[in-house]
Image (tube, rainbow, N blue to C red):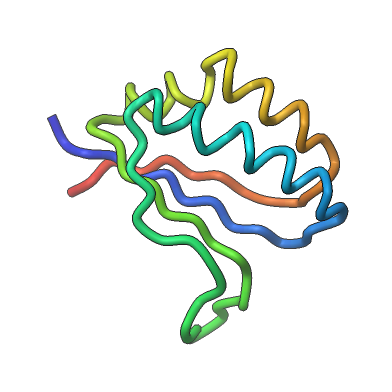
Length: 96
C-alpha cells in the first residue's frame, strides 16, 4: 500500500492565539493516528508562481490512515479550536 502525504499551506494567519490552540491539539491528535511530521515552516525558496506560505508536510502509511486522522474526534476538536484563526488548504496525496 503506498504511503500518503498531507500537505497544508497557510494563506493567512488571522489569529495567532487560535492557531496556537489548534497546534496544541492537532499534533497529538495526528501522531496518535500514525502521522509523521516531515517538515514545517516557511519555504526556503519558491519558484514559478510559488508563494511564501507556511507549509506543513506529514507522512502517513496510507490515504485511508490520513483521512481517518483528519476525521478523528481529536482532530475535529483541534479544527474547532482553530475556527477562523487561519485560511489554509489541506491536500492528501498518495505516493507514486
